[in-house]
Image (cartoon, rainbow, N blue to C red; front, side, top):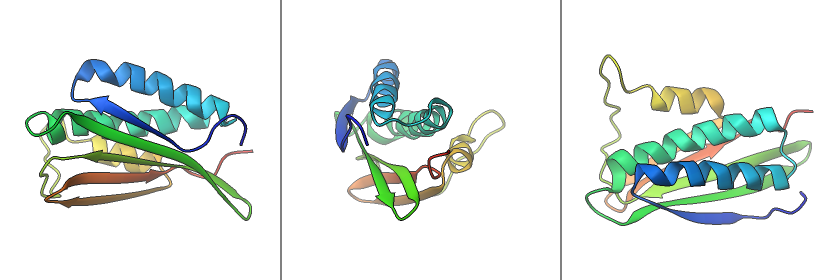
Amino acid sequence: MTGAGAVSWPVPCDPASLEPMRRNLGRWLAAAGWPSEAAADVVLAVNEAVSNAVEHGCAQRCDGVRLDARVSTGVGTRRVDCTVHDCGDWDGVPQRCATRGFGLPMIRELSGDVRIEHGSAGTTIHLTSRDEPG
């Protein structure tokens, strides 16, 4: 891993905060030597998770969302682990309508592993990328 360690960013409950978050995450992944195509998948999945948190999880109850990211390595593996936490009170039941509600399936498709925890302290989504290609 070159030039990158674990990072944590606060993300205000404002849709305008998404673009700087994507840019910062993309730069951090590049500094970690993550391949650009795989980095795009990570950024898109995290963007969707943070977008959901901004729209549904924090606007009425707190000042923002927290994004934590780190590169983890194991024997023959290298992954990006990201955690998005908000203070919302989602009950864990996805809401779908004809034109919305596809975010979680998209996050799952772009990620190697996804876990969601929800409770009185808020909602946390853990995303792990697929192994680094190459």
